[in-house]
Each structure stands twice: as C-alpha cells, then as structure tokens.
Image 1: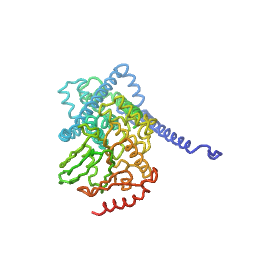
Image 2: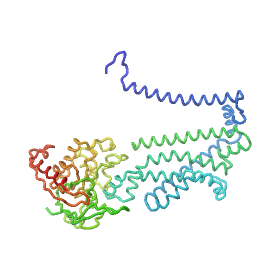
Image 3: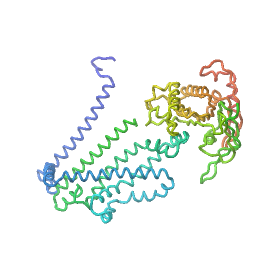
Image 4: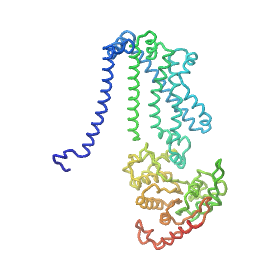
Length: 271
Length: 254
C-alpha cells in the first residue's frame, strides 16, 4: 500500500471512520435535542413563561416519580401495565398466527372471512372497551382483552398477506419433491415468513400497549392508564405527565427489545 | 431398451372466466429407458404444462400416459423434477437443503444419507455442506439442486429449463456437467429448453412442439460425431450446423 504524508489511511479505513463519525453525529444530535427540550421546558417553568401547575417541569417530574414510588406504589403500577401488555402481546401473536394459518390452509375460509376482518380492523377499538367492561367486569381480563382487540385483527391481516407472498415456486418445489400441503406450510411458508412475523411483532407490541392503556382508562384500579386518568381527575398533572414519560420509556424499551430479538434471529438464520 | 414412458394423445386446457385456453393437443411420443429427450418449442406453448402432467402435478384432460418401471415391478417409476431456478432455501444449510426430499418422505435412513454423502463428495460439495446457499456459485447451486432431486433416486428426471438463470459461460459448463452426471447415473431425462444448441448438445432425440395449442411437429434424432470430449466438441461436430438449421426451420415455419 502506498504510504506518504498525504495518504496515511487506506480508502477502506477512511470509509470506516466516516461511517463511525456519521453514527456518532446522529447519536449526539439525538441527545442534544433531548437536552434542549428539557432545558427549555425547565427554564420556561422557572421563569413563569408556562404555568408549572399545568405543564409541570423536568425537576417536578423527577420529584413526582420519587414521591410516587415511596407513597403510591408506582413500581407496582408500572409492573401491572407491563404484565398486561406482555400477556396481550403474546396472545395477539399466538391467535394471529393460528388464524393466519387457518386462512392460508383454506382459500374458502379466507374469502369468506375477508370483509369481516377488514371491518373489525378498521373499527375504533376504544368503542368496544365499554362493552368489555360490562361483559368481563373491571379487572385484568378486560384490560388484556382490550389490548388484544386493538392489535389482533391487523396482525391477522398482515401475517396472512405475508404467508401469501411466499414464492409460489418454492411451494411447487415441495410438491415436486412429493411433499403435502402441510409440508409446504412448515418447510416454506412459516420459515419464509419469519421477517414479516418479526415486523408484525414490532408493530403489535406498540398496539398492545395502546389497547392496555385504553382499558386501564376505563376499568382499572392499578396501572399507568389508571394513574393518568386519576391524576387528571384530581388535577395532579405532575402525576399525569410523569406517567406519560414512563410510557414513552416503556415503548422505547419494548421496541429495542424486539429489535434486538430480530437482529439475533436474522443473524442465526442469516436472513 | 423398452419404453419407460409413453404419451398417447395427451390434451390439456386451462380454464378461466375469460374462456378456455388449449395448451396441449394430442401429444404422443415414447421415451426409452436411459434416453435423453429435449423438448423445444416457441415460448408459452405449453412445455412446462407437459412436464407438470408427466410428473403428476397436473392431470391430463384427455389421453393416456403409460409408464413402465425399469426394475420390472408394477409400481410407477419414480420421477424427479428440476425447476428453472434452484430454489434452495436460504434458511437451511446446503446439507439440509439437499436432504429436503428425504425429509419430506420420512426417509432419513442411514443408507439414503450415505448415498447423499457420496453425491456430495462426487459433485465436490462436501466441504460446502454447512454453508448457506447464497455462499455458493451459480453452478454449485445447480449441483446442490440436482443432488436434492437425485437423493430420492428418481428413474426419470424432468428438467424445466434448469440452466436459464445462469450466465452464458456458466450455463455451457453447468449444462454439460449436469447432463454428464445424469448420464453416468444411468437415468432417463426429459429436458425443456429454448436454446437450440443446448438441445442438440445434450439430447439423443429432440421433440419439436408447435405454438399453442402445442402439437408434436416433428422428432429429430441426434447423432453427432465427436472429435474429443471437450466442452465444445458437440458444437464442433460436423452434423451440428445441419441439425441447427433443421430445428430453426421447423420452429420458424408454421
């Protein structure tokens, strides 16, 4: 490699440095933006440009967070919301895989079911929540069902679409090798749909959280959704804003978790 | 050699709401055991439909297909089918791809697996067994697809333009290579191709189909005087040009 005082780095090395620089810049800007936001928020509250009673401030949020942990079992509320979201997320995955499989197996069933799925998917699910309360009472079941109802129909539709998009020649291959329909499903459709399954999971964890919070608004004595509603009713907006910020963090962690899982699975199967 | 396969007046049509499309009309020909047959014809004339019918994926609407098992038993001969692309599954290693057929038939017995092992060594793929298909060259993928087909020990091999996804140079080498392997294994082969030179080089007999609905226009026996066993020997044979012109005439003149 020619080395003189003008070209100390090879092209590959300088590319790597450029690449790293780019990533550092992005990360830095993200944190910087966050910091700016916090400072403006804190300062505007401190100088009285906004009323901290309505808009709170970062320091108040932290104080409220610590206070709530001590006096109000905040950790329990967070735990309940997490648990409900996880259960409804897992149920969404199981149910939608089963339904999409059934639809794939039976052309007639999928043709019959299509308009129903489309209607149920576009229905605003918060409209169903009051019904769930009447049917299932105000407990965890209602909230899990609410989370489920938000995500499950869309999940069925996108998984079924993914199943259908699998290369039909690969299915023909299974038949030419003497395989049956169930072989085509297990050996081609299911492994071939893994990327779709993962992207559906990414969307669904967010939707399950939305559903669970809607459920908690209406029918809970515990959970972050309950804290938000309770806080707004007693005009303790610190509590509302703290809960919303915790929700943001939960959403971030869920997303990162699935991203990590996706990365691992893709690496394992080299997709 | 006796006939392993006889087609008698086989016809097939596709049906849709827009009407009926005749694909095959009164197709009749015989195939002897160990023979290499090439089927040529204008694109879209129903060549692939014909292979699908022979392999049993589709059922003919009229006519008969008579098969005789070369081992003398009453059971139908085993048929292997190679598609246009290799369709190796990226989520499986090369080895798990080639045993797919055995897996589907629940025949992962030690003697079948040792046969696969022999094929892998013979075809130079044994050191790539744990690789992913995308790490293989086009020719090696095609070989892996062939092993996947041969693992089920078919007596008749159907090849549907199996080399069309390869670039020209690779295609010349791989087609000669694969056909040599199949010939050495003593199998009967029916290959669809749109490459006239390829048909002349590979086949013992060429069946020419007309445009849709396909009928058998002519059968052309191929006898080449080969100077050596090089890759281009068949293309340099004195009979090649004449056969090529004959095929060209048959295909271009309705």
